[in-house]
Image 1 (cartoon, one colour):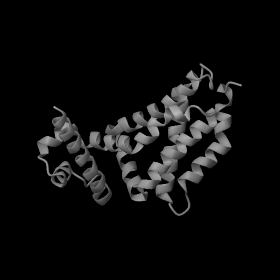
Image 2: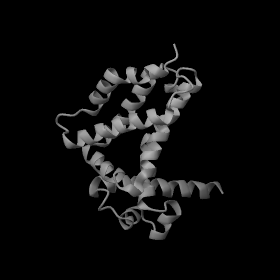
Image 3: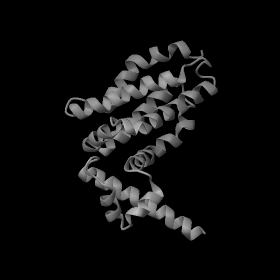
Image 4: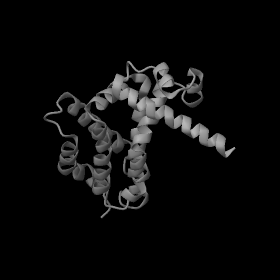
Length: 195
């Protein structure tokens, strides 16, 4: 049974690795499930044992790239709210920057497709988890609008990614998010800060 589980995990990892590479080479629109299965050395039907659609696979890739950040949420929540949230936003954007401009453009094509709302929901829920932990730890008030703050901040980082893709020579996502946080985050959080 252990060998079977290892084989399943290895096949899933192979699919993710090849999809990541093909996404960078071909782009979201041009990459097909057939491309992924050929590169992975599996039958097309095997793909569907792991993912229902190409979009599900891409969401899994996003989760894989963001997993270190997601697992650090309890550690981030130890700091004050502004530092916690700013660190989270910077690390999120660093994952995007590390993937490169071309991948960021593919990401935009993916997230603007209405059938891919799960990525938006995933990003909202992840940041909401951090904000909720700050509430639970008594660093933000219990009446903090967790979902609204999460939506506001995710909208901001999506806008930064979009701006970077439009003008990579003039927009630095990390500088932009730090500037936003330095100029506005304290004011946004102020009504909910616990003294």
